[in-house]
Image (cartoon, rainbow, N blue to C red; front, side, top):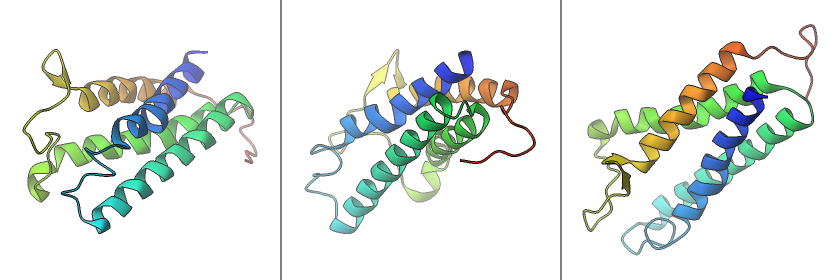
Length: 137
């Protein structure tokens, strides 16, 4: 059950919470963003939410936690890697006004995705496919 919960909580973070936090004037409708940047943002939100729906289907209907934890790990790990590389491309978690959403002084994205990623790694390492000979979606 831990595996299902780890994937589900992770999916809720990247497929529901992130779009709620980003479909507004700080991201999607940010007047300082170019149309090209906005299309990449919306594409990322739709792609990640779609992967999340697939992961929930895999976990709750196909009983496939290994693949869904790996897919979720790729989504969340991609964000963490982008954060680690931010200085190389001029990225930042701060808004244009200099503010940043934090909890206990830690950026909420790093905190939430970091904890969820640890749970996903544990889930992925301990998950066992239901059918190890032939897994189909």
